[in-house]
Image (cartoon, rainbow, N blue to C red):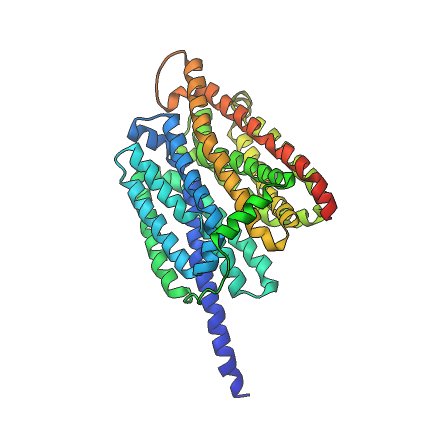
Length: 429
């Protein structure tokens, strides 16, 4: 009996340290998610500060997607070869320094470079977080901790809506991102203490091997379908909820960005709930994943169409908030379905490659789409206004109608993708 406390104490200390380490990386992932969807909360102030228009905001969003995409293929390899601690600390440093540089940027070129650095750091966070969960928790806790890890990102998304918009209104966007940089540096110090030293890596993986596996996977049409499905979902949802959601609502009802952030806050809460509760429903859809993905894509398209300016003006802010809430539930439920397809198509051995291919395709699609969306909204707004005025006001109802139309077009690969996967999914059942 006297030996029992001595045995339990180290186990308890190990468990406590595991949760502390997880918390440090989860906070970093929340900051990364905040960075991804923050343009919508700063866009109006950003346009006024740099005397730019929708094209400038599109560049702000596009730069993040390109940096995020560039780091996706090597993300898993870097974590495997160099360990969680070294990768996380380097990523946190890049994100924090990039945030400070963004806050101090004197021109749009520096803004692009700073956001590119932020994205390169943030891109590794979720991969490192999943690796840490796998190393630190028993198999029976992996599912729960992975789900909570995903929700930690949505917490950052929630902060990027009403709280960030209110802070930007009160203190300015530059001060807000300096604070974010400082929080990141404090978390960096916390992570350095909480994370265990990385063991020596004996992995025989090489970047050439990962790229070869990726090239081989792209020889299968079904895998292209999976990438198209996720890319469509990611680009559409992120463009609406992370770039133009708050400016659009603010324009519809003539309210401040902080007040307009309420529907987007509801979206993020719905996203978290959907990822948890609809994830369980995804297990029951395992025998008909293609059909489930098509239906959920069609539902997402209907909800986006319900945000057209004439409908929003007629039915009011409460209606728009409800639509964003349901859209969040749908978006949260989409990801588990795509992950199930990825695992079935690539098998457990190559699921990392599958995730990299999907995320890279999503980043490229979203990055290419942003300038097109920005210029199209600007052109439509100027045509609708009947003059050559510049700035946010020129977007108007015509510009946001164009946004909705483009989002619906971008959703079409989400219907074609499951059809391309159908045969292989049935064979693998």
